[in-house]
Length: 105
Image (cartoon, rainbow, N blue to C red):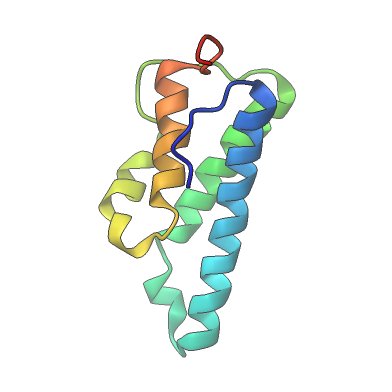
């Protein structure tokens, strides 16, 4: 679904915003289906915080691409099987590491 790297900063921002929506939806699903979802969802909080910090740095102009993983990717990789949007996080991280696909058709 998210196999194409973003070509513009706006597309990249939308991916980050979509990931935040996905976290909210996953949390809501778990909380609806599970009585004790808090312990099961502890990994969502640092993911959400990392994405919010990324989005804030994009908004204030302090964001920069760099060839290293985003800080939340350790958690994303550890809980990959529990995250139906793990591929979206991988695309965001890949873009962070390699930049926008401005030269791709």
